[in-house]
Image (cartoon, rainbow, N blue to C red; front, side, top):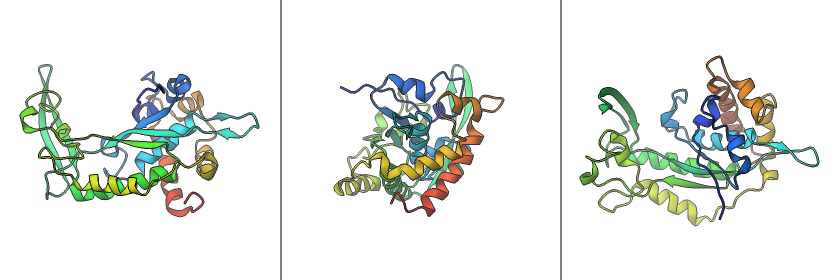
Length: 249
């Protein structure tokens, strides 16, 4: 059975979490990533459908190496966890605020909650873009919302948004994005071979200053050990590429 280790987008931006993607996946069978735009402060739109495929592409770049013929080899990446929390049926997208109590302290929490309709649109766009950039596949978090009788237990008690990540509502009815997933799967999308996304790899390599592996973290990090500024810069170029380039369509 293949072995891997789930890493979030924080492993792309921090030098101090001791989980650099190229070292973690160096002894793994599958390269993976977990990503949620609504959790990232520098992503302006919490439903930016470019962010999830971008994290796959950046992981692939950081883990790239030279092949025997001298060409860059960028391993394909599985989007192992993505998704989002939704507002109640019929409600618009909104931001929730609540007070979380933990360890004797009170913390003010805020969380974007997508309308079911807007989240379905987001889901359709993400799936198409993941396939377009050569992802190995996508695993959605998660199957069902929590039933209200579980709300007084962890993780639902203090993390209100965790109650609403499901494809399915507690009453068993499908949310709109579940149908989007079914429709996409029915098209039988194929995993694109690396040569079909070579132009994207070349763009990212140029944008990063040809810094991969340890060099990515050394050259992209600021004095606080964060690579966010460089990530945001490359993300803007990635977005423009997806919008304008037809070589990987």
